[in-house]
Length: 135
Image 1 (cartoon, rainbow, N blue to C red):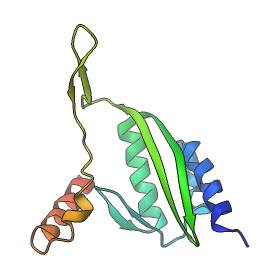
Image 2 (image 1 turned 90 degrees about the vertical axis):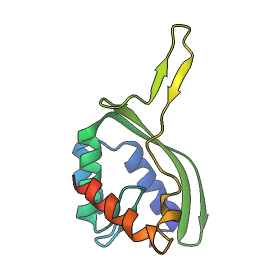
Image 3 (image 1 turned 135 degrees about the vertical axis):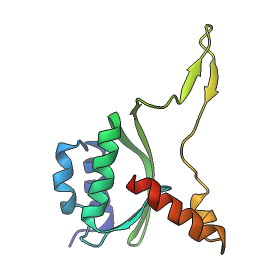
Image 4 (image 1 turned 180 degrees about the vertical axis):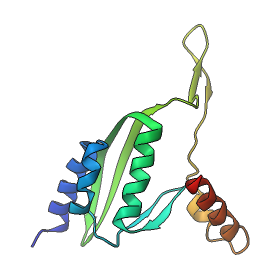
């Protein structure tokens, strides 16, 4: 039987070497009923998770995943990771002539999962995210 630490190490290598061509192997690392959640998605199923990554690779070029730390507690692993890439249609950083940043825009809402728990606004936000994810 594989330990959670060993399973995480396998998954870490998979993510850090992930390309659009290697997405076909995702079912070797996640269960058929995997839950995947980020600020824009909340899906269940290996096929749904794969579709999210396929859209990511279609939208963002030069994608790299890097996992720089993790902690294991029984069957649960927390990990800190960074996704880098080039998103051609949006400017994330703008520079002036001296090389100083004049604009730094973030497109992720870290508090979105907190807002989802609010009684009235939560359902509205989840509906809007589903519409945006399917657009």
